[in-house]
Image (cartoon, rainbow, N blue to C red; front, side, top):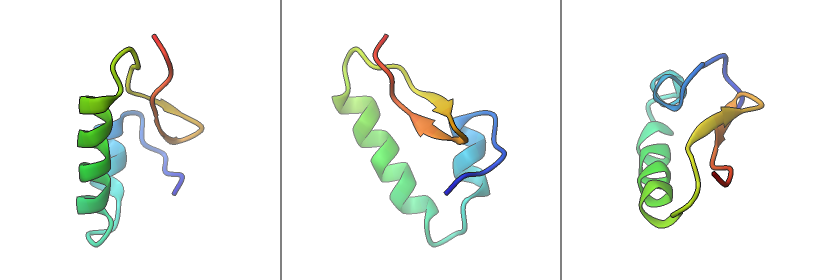
Length: 51
């Protein structure tokens, strides 16, 4: 879902209520498991490119 958010926090805040908990869980898993990757926005969506 592409939104006009400038950050992942903004992206999640703009999601419909029924999607927000799922995205928060995915984000938490990515932050925990993707060592060596950096959270950012790309093409209007959260992404985790290598540092």
